[in-house]
Image 1 (cartoon, helix red, strand yellow):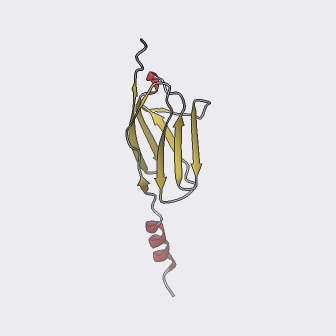
Image 2 (cartoon, rainbow, N blue to C red):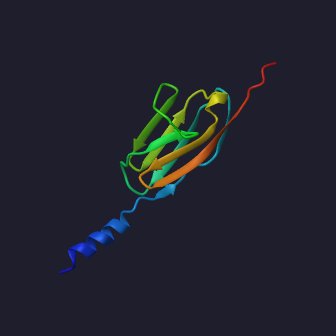
Image 3 (cartoon, rainbow, N blue to C red):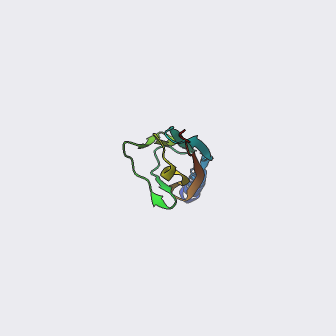
Length: 107
């Protein structure tokens, strides 16, 4: 019979958390909606979203959700102030993408 200790180490190595699909830069115009999505190799992992180092919380204009391995951050009606570097961190893994918001010129 196999060594339980060795088997546990192998199982832990196989279950190491990894980013399958990371964040990408997004460019939108003011008042448009956009989303950032991350896919991990394990389901239902707790994570934190930040913008320029400050934690992002769910609110009417910003929806954070998790469906299995997929984590999403959806911004509705973005403003110039929403631009910045968005980061996703779960345990020891992190990925980031920049949101660029184009100003709508009013004639």
